[in-house]
Each structure stands twice: as structure tokens, then as C-alpha cells.
Image 1: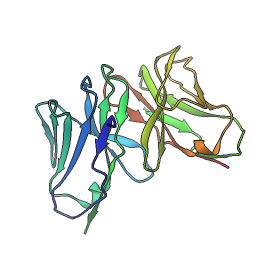
Image 2 (image 1 turned 45 degrees about the horizontal axis):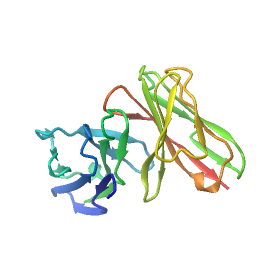
Image 3 (image 1 turned 30 degrees about the horizontal axis):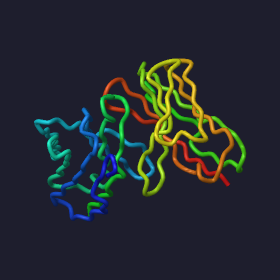
Length: 111
Length: 110
């Protein structure tokens, strides 16, 4: 099983749609979880951290299920500007520094 | 703050040439790392450092060397470039948690 697995995508959705990304991780000792966003030919940037209690930032909601080793990201009312690749990121075991990245899921929001 | 800077932005090498990719950060972060990103492979960790004088190997270290003589700088050296090292290279730094990435170096090895 790969360390971090994401929906392969790509996702093509119309503006205003709700889209969900799923991710699973294999290392039960992982402590930190993130979603990063990467625009075409740019560097990855942190979108949001993911906490066990779930967290929301505007139109974005992230959830973590430690028992199932599963992370999700929900985008509501999607905008054209949400078009990007979304990367699921998990810390490596007991380290808060070393991160393992999923391969990413490409989202295209269409007018 | 400039954040994380990388030079050069683009580079073309011939097989067997050596070069150094530069990375610097001005956020006083202890942790720095180098990744390569290839189509369909995602970001893979090459080497990382938890502080000046301390480096360790990541997932794909072969063909690369690093050193960390200062907190600010973390250069990546390609010893003898191979076509398989054609990739986009990202440097990142962090304190705890969020990693801040540089803009990347696009390297082509012919």
C-alpha cells in the first residue's frame, strides 16, 4: 500500500459545484495532516491543516478519520480560481518535519 | 521577507556535467528539504536537514549531495547529471508543520 493515496482524478466540475477529494495514508503513527494546493508550474502552497475534530475555512472543509486513516477535503460553491492540483500531505511517522505527498488530484472548474 | 529563494529557475545540462542548485531562506527555519517532482510521481523527498551541520537522505537520494553549513542555505549538488534527473526541483523550509516552498528549478539533462 502506498504511503499516501489520493483520488487519481482529474475532476472537471461546473462553477458552483461541490467537489470532494479523498485520501488514505498507511502510517498509523503519522501525526500531522495537510492539504496543499499547487497551481500549474508553480510551487505547492498550504491550503489548510487537517485536525481530528475537522476544520473549516470558508468554502473549504477538511476532515480526518484516524481509525480509518482517511482524510477528505470538501470544496463548496467552487470558483474558477479553485482550478489547481490538490495534494494530500501526511507527516512521516513520529516526525513533524518529514512530509509525504500524495500524487495530487487535478481539479478544473469550468464556467 | 523573501521567504525561500532558488536559483537558477531553469537549467540545461549535458549528461555527466555537475552543478549546484541553490536554496536560501530568511525565516530562520531549522528544517529544510529538497524534493523532485515528476509527472505522475508527485513530490519525492531527496535529502533533508534538521539544522546546520545535520543532513539525511530521503526517498530518492542517489546522484545528489547536500550540505548545510548555515541555517539559511541548503544547496543541492548533482555530481554527474543523468537524463533521469530531468525534473522540477523544489526546496522547502519549515519550523514545525507547514512547509514553505521555493519557486522551483526546472532542470533538463540531455
